[in-house]
Image 1 (cartoon, rainbow, N blue to C red):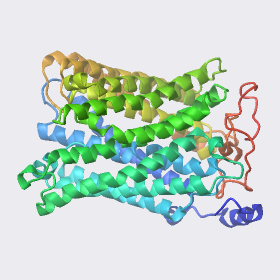
Image 2: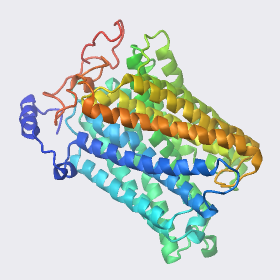
Image 3: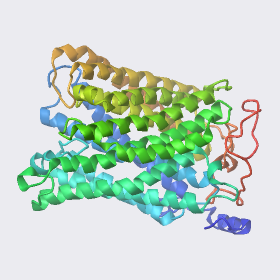
Length: 547
C-alpha cells in the first residue's frame, strides 16, 4: 500500500469491502484500523471502570482516619489494583490505541496502517495480558503497587505478583507493535504533498509517542521478566539476600516509566493542539516550534529518570545532574503552553464542549508541570517524597491532563468516529463537573503532602481529616463527571443527529472523509497543497476550504 495506489484501485477495493459483515466473528478478525480502534475504546473503557471503582473504594476508606472499611492488606491490594489497571491498561494505551488508531491513517491520507494484521494482533495481546493481570490481582491480591518495587515484589509479596507481572509483560508487546506500526505508517504512507511540516500536530505527537514506545518498552519488559525469574528460580538480580541490587530495579524501571509519562501525555498535547486551533479559528502559533518541542520532550524524557531516586542513596552529583535535566525537560513543555495561549490570543473562541476539555487540560497540566519543578529540586523533593504531594502532582499530569485530553479528543472527533452529534449542553456540563471535581479531589492533597501526610497509608492522624473529606467528596463529584460523557456519547450513538462530514468546519484530511469514514477512508487518493491549520482570514464556522 503505497502513495502510488491509483484512484481506480481505491474504488475497486472500497466496493469489495463496503458490505463488510457486522457479525462478532467479523469484528474479532477485522483488519480495519477504525474497527480495531473501536475494540480498544470498548476495552479501555472497561478497565477504566475497574480502576475507577478501586479509586472510589480508596477515597471512601480515607473519609475517616481509622481503617474502618478496609484492612491494611485490603487497602494495599486495592490501591495496587487501581494503579496497575489505570497506568498499564488505561493511561498508556488510551489515546494512541483509540484516537491514534482511528485517525492517524485518515489524517495522512492513507487507507489503513502499514501493518493491518499486526494492528489486530496488538489488540489481542493487550486484552489477553490485561485480563490475565486483572484476574491475578482480583483473585489473589497484589500489594506491591503499580511499580512492583523490589525487594518487596521479589521477596515478601504474595505469589500472585508473578502472574500480574507476566500480564503486564505481555501487554508491553502491544505497545511495541503499535509503535512500530505508527512509525512505519507515517514514514511510508503519507498522501502526495503531505510533507513533514504539513503534518497535523496530532500526527507529530503520535509519532513522538511511538518512538518512546519502541525504544523504552523493551526495558520495562526485560526488567519485569527478571523480577519473575528471580522469584521463580532464586536468581540473584535484585534480591540483596541473593547478592542482587534492589536499586538496579529502580534505575531500569524508571528509565522506562518516566518516558512512559510522555507516552501518556504527548498524545494529549497533540489532541489539545487540534482542538484549540479549530475553536479559536486561528492558525496554530509557532507550528514548527510545537513540532520540535514534541520531539524534544520525547528525547529529554529518557534522561531524567533519576529524579525519582533522590532519596535512594544515589550520589549528590547524580541528583544534581538529574535535577538540572528535569528542569530542562520543562522548557519544551512550557513552549506548548505559551503557544496554545498565543493561539487563543485575539482568536474567535467558541466554548464548545471539546474546547472546555482542552482548556481544562491546559490549566491542570500547567499546575502539574509547575509542581513537577518542585519535585525536581532535590531539597524540596526530600521533604515531600512519598507524600500526598507526589500523588497530587502525578494525578494533575496523568488524570487531570491526559484524561481531559482524551475526553476532549473523543468529543472533538466523535462526529467523525460515529457520524452522530452529541448533546453540547451535557458535554459542557461534564467538562465543568470533571474540572471542579478533580481540583476538589487533588488540590487538598498538595497541602496534605507538604504537611507530611505519607501516601499509601489507610490510617492517618485526625489533623488531616478535613482535607481527606474534601478530597473524597471531590472524588464522588469527579466520578459523576466521568459518567456523563459515557451516557452522552452512548445516547448519541442511537439518537444523535447526523453530523455531516465536517460539523466544526475544521481543516485537515480527516474532515474531508465521510462520517463515519468508509472502509478505505477516501474515494480517491487525496493530495495536499496547503499548510496545516489554514484558518486565517475566515469568519468562524463559515465553512473551510479543503487542506
